[in-house]
Amino acid sequence: MADQVSILYQDLEDAERTLMSRVSASVPRDEMGLERMVTEHREFESRLHTYESRIETVQRNYATIPQKPASLQAKMEKLVDKWENVTNQSSLFTEKLTRLETVLTSLEETRQYVSHFEIKLSSTENLPIEDEGLKRVSEELYNLQNTAQAHQYNVDKMVDETKNVRRLTEKSRGSSKRHPDVEKLEDDVHRTTERWNESLSNVVQRFEFFPRM
Image (tube, rainbow, N blue to C red):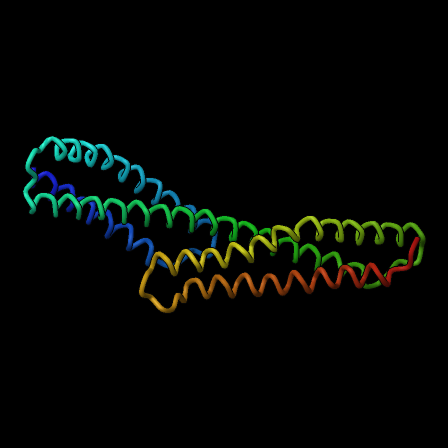
């Protein structure tokens, strides 16, 4: 039985090395890179799930031994600790990927909204003279305001989830002091949020000074 425990422990160590190499890998900053990482981790979790029945079998066999040798007991404790560590790390990584998905999706959406706002605002710099033209521009600005208000929740959530990505990264990487990949993601979010706030402010100002119809 000792050999069975040792083999299983070695398999878990191999799985742990694979997982930690992915934990240490740079955080993707685009949705395509994230999709690859998510697919790889799903495959990893599927393989990890197969170890559960093996561990349960070993534990049942171990429980039937009336007088357990100290060396075997120590091996079993190491095995259980290793299993708990790997599964906990895997869960942390899954959560990080889920939160990162929210960040990257919102980041891309916000960039698109900002570009749309900037184009629309540029087109309203020179106001038309006729009433119909003024009414059309007024409706466009009103729609921009409504769109901005509706998307603000996603921007706020993007900022919050970026903080969670950092928290989970720091927790899973242990002794690492700096995380340049997370810092780059934070910079992306900060720049995009600043552009968003500026566009939102411009929409509000343009609408406030627009002649009411």
